[in-house]
Length: 301
Image (tube, rainbow, N blue to C red; front, top):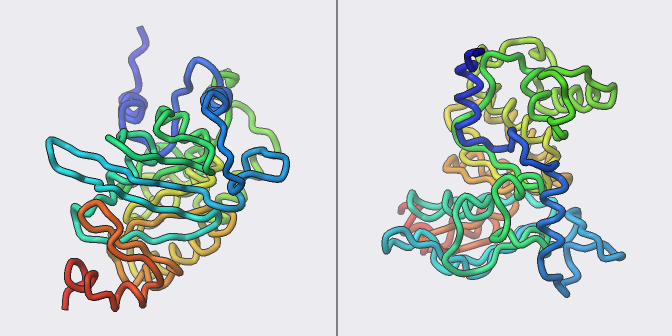
């Protein structure tokens, strides 16, 4: 019996920001079927004129009254939050404020005790599995990059491309010109064109972070959840990451959880402050920095 590649086994079992092993039917069909089975909504935002789901306008993420408890501790306490399509929103707050749990709810990793969570105001996230949510258009990047270290940058993007993997006879089937163009465009976006043939494990920390963002982009997400993306980066890498996020906003919606206030100042038009599982303050960075409640619980005097 052929021995399983230990790297493949590791990545199969590790938490991933995008689905890799396909379900029994195509991911797109599974997500579409799950959405179709949900009750229809009378809300007009998040839909086009003909009623089809449109994630390029209106509200892309809607959380209302989300509560999550772990052994009596309320990680989220009646959390209500909306994010507009194309918006770049920064989420800040002290450790234990509920930032990670909020992203876990959005991606289906954690089910709320109460409350509603909608994507595009029509997709009930509380009814979908993690892989269905990812294929519906939500991508998540964890703080520690998860890449295929022993494959090239190009191969990492190819592996994460949104496609029905069942039809591929080999791991690296011949790519179409359109697929190669998509990879080339993504390489340019994340500024790794010159490193396309380089082994991913040899990249700098910042480059690995950009590669993982590129892998998410290959899944064609409408909403990106980014957890402390500049942690451990050099000043130059942080600056380049800010430029990347600003270039993605509009085409994508971004929710960035970050502690680096200088970075937040560079990219944020609107900031949400979480504290004890609820929204403490929201507005421009200047507004929240001058809020006495935020100063007391997070920024310090």
